[in-house]
Length: 422
Image (cartoon, rainbow, N blue to C red):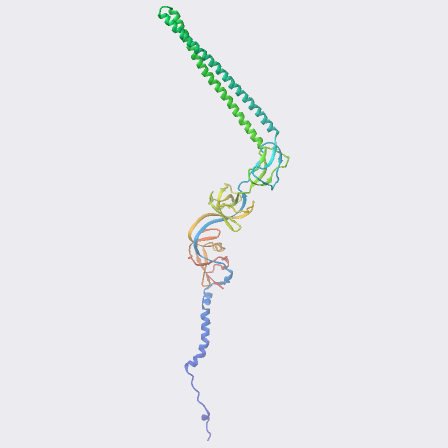
């Protein structure tokens, strides 16, 4: 009888449930961990319309503070006082300086030779002497006339007194019956006659004195008028020596040395180096918002200097309006004529507003939308902007303080709602 192999078989032990799922857990746990780690990125990737390298984007945060609405313009340094000296008369000019020479107030710059003006001055001086002589003669004549009239008056006074005494004697004799009535009346008539002559002499003296005073005053006025003529000619002759009105620099020579010049012909330009201003060109669209006194900030070597509009041209040239900015708190040292500087005109000041830095994003979407950075995504959001300055933009609505937005050009985003920032 053949035996089976049952005696050779060993029973196999059955595995428990834990041992059966352990290998599966060892596989699933790493997968779950990896999935959990990559889930945010995967969810952002799924939610995003497209992706862009975030390191190539510029961003900024929304802040609260004061905002100045300004406009940036180019300016150049000019001397606040740069007179052009002109010829005072016709003649021959002799220059005493050259272009680029430093001069001080009162320094001789040029001399004009004008024989005609010198001759005219001598003629008017001679006429002045003649008028003064006539005035002195008139005064002497007036004193002589006054003396003669006074002598006549004094004689009449004496004559009147003598006649009055004679009348008193004739009256006494008449009253005592020692003289005739005719003699008394005759002496009385003589007293009245002399009294009339005395009154007439005094009136004549008064009228002649007024006439002589009038003539003297007229001669004095003629002398004064002639003196003004002489003084004016002396001034014009003194101006033939052209001197510098300021401490500065001869910037330009307009004539040739020893050349003939005409009255009011420009001779040379002098620049005052002690005070400078900034000449700017304002775009026409901003000109209506500017006025004399508008605040300005001049950037010189990275330092801001305060200023204000001193003058504004009423004309528009090539869509620009010229204006002059004066420094209000002191000008920087080392300024040079025609040196270029950047200038900002402060048109408006906004206090305690939400604002962001200005960037290319403003023009990309018409200043109506921005991309807000949230959890690695750039999300498109509608906003409303207010005042726009050279460097900052006011946010009226759509953003909160502390949020971060994309400053870069947004055209590459092609209007996508969400952008994954890698």
